[in-house]
Image 1 (cartoon, rainbow, N blue to C red):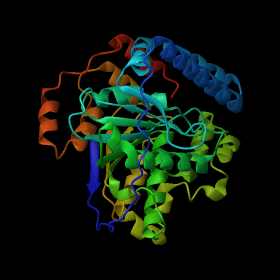
Image 2 (image 1 turned 60 degrees about the vertical axis):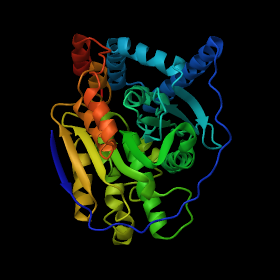
Image 3 (image 1 turned 90 degrees about the horizontal axis):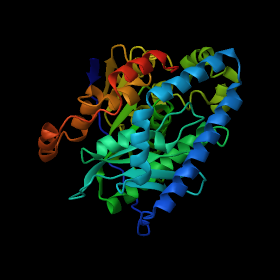
Length: 392
């Protein structure tokens, strides 16, 4: 793993924000019948998302082969998926589908530590899914494992294409972050220790949200949450410059016409390319408000090349932001987020994220040092086969 970093040259002015109170949190459905019904509804939604993706991509030879590879990949990892799904649907530590806005997909899931014996740090996670099949439950493995380290995780759902385009996704994610910032204390979270994380398309969306919020604050616009509440941004396997990615995605099967529809045409590329936007002289004050930014990428990621993260970090450092890049040799788009966590034991990416979150908490650090290795969820042979067959 390699890294590069540079300190920020300035800090932004403090920004006041409004705290909203919410009604008492709903109680968890206690009956097996209720949980089974919810599981059936979630399965129906996920199936619909998959069908929608195939309808928009078209079923040609390329996609038939990738669909077959995806089916084999999922079967190989099924032992782990089933265990995580059981936790997601039946654990009392998961609060599913909390409403944060008025749109159909404005829901989030909370993963809570076993003991809430004081305000806990919070990770707000925006899932990936090619802007088409993103879904909050994709973060359940991350939520489970971070909750075991006394960290609350909020996985935000958002409208996918064609239900919404990129501006809707950014708006939804911002609303979800606002909800967490203003209400997480009622679930045992610390509103002064919130960390933002996104993976793949979710890394792109959350980076857009963070920069857009910083620009609003720098212009003195009315806000309901503040960039100052975000202690660190973690970007995993993301793409941050649409101009550099459109041809790559087209060759990978996310065809140009579809990508342009999702991103609202080339005229919107600059607005939704954080790498390009931060280098605009008008954004300099906004850049000074950004939290430290840590980007992670596998060098064998073919879905989104690792150069995407490297280029973004280079741009951030040029304008004086604090940014670090961590490259993982030989890792693919899914290794860092799925196969490695399913492997159990020590995970370099996971341990680094936890160490950043617990950097100023000696008690938490002591607990981390004594934490047992994470349990393996999938046999090593199946993980190696999944790595080789992965269509991502």
